Image (cartoon, rainbow, N blue to C red; front, top):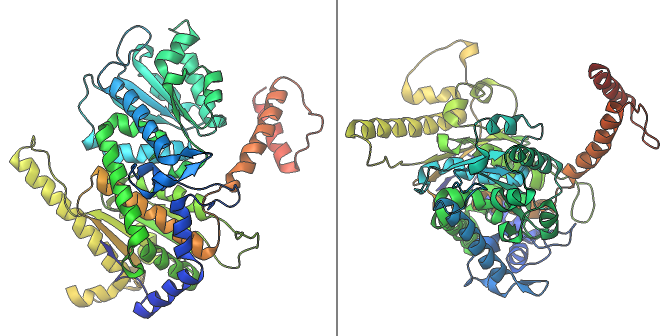
Length: 513
């Protein structure tokens, strides 16, 4: 349920915004998205993340890429995921010494980490019962500190690493993978044994996984028509399948597919992604709000704001249209957030009495089913805490809207200026009946399609991310310069840095010697 009653718009405004989507060709754009059209215009690729959760009976069954049926590729991938996940869950995936795997560590970054990590955290209570206790962990930090801390508590004989990288060239991921392999070598003498027993790879480049030493039976395919931030539905979601079981993973896909069908078929005024997108456009482009906070009122959704910040800012953080013209309007806002109950004791001070202009999304499950293993007293306490969370969610959005005027309903209090609440802050509230794999799939897909609608209206490409590429390229040159200086070579022929960078490099060199 999407409640827009605290937004600063009326029915006429919505009608005009819907007219705007038709002017910008939204209906045709949706058809292109689902049929495999080249919606990623800068890279001349389709974006078929909807096909990953569609099933063979869907319209995607007719879509072919390079002469291959997309639905058949997806079906095979799901079987490969199920084969690997099932072996791990049943204690049949053995380490080099014959011990069953009891820890799975996903090594990735960006879309190969944020999405699966968020889902595994949110749905931890839906983990399946495995033959042996099984932990699923995530590593993304390139500096090695995160991995070093984890490895202190693991055993080489019972640890499986997943290298998740679409290109299999991402320096952050490969550096962590090399560190993991060096750690395994302390006890395992053969790289062949390490590859066979302790690594799984997911990439669009099988030849690169081969070269790294991962055998083909330990590989899961990925394709260039799946964007990184849309990839948790693919083999990148293997950690989810391992934790929830393949049935749980398919429930996640089912929920996303239900939202895909809703987005494709529902009328505009009843279409959740379109309504959420147009509300954002009204706030950003007409009311001048440049910041958007995501406030889930459920600790299980703690990682959702981080996930949505990547989804939206990497997709729509663009300043050039599809025809290469500079935009003269704002696109993606700055997105941040946290669990609402925690944020109330932190940045809500700025929301209520600060000066920046923003709008908010409140997200909350209405009920939470307590485990039958709990005592009656514990279940009663958990029900109270759920009611407390709902009360705070509704109350905070109410005060953001009404400010001190809320006191007219509650009590007549005259207060000092430093205690005044200006109110008049717009927000939307999203309610799901209960947080489950299916409802989480619905929620994620809702935001995916919201981002797409906004991109269509703004005439920008939400499926590329050139803004992250240049920094990666320059980092390689800078790394070479640091390594040269560490080796005593103080200058590199043909490489010049600006004065600021040169100063930083010189400072690092002095501190390291």
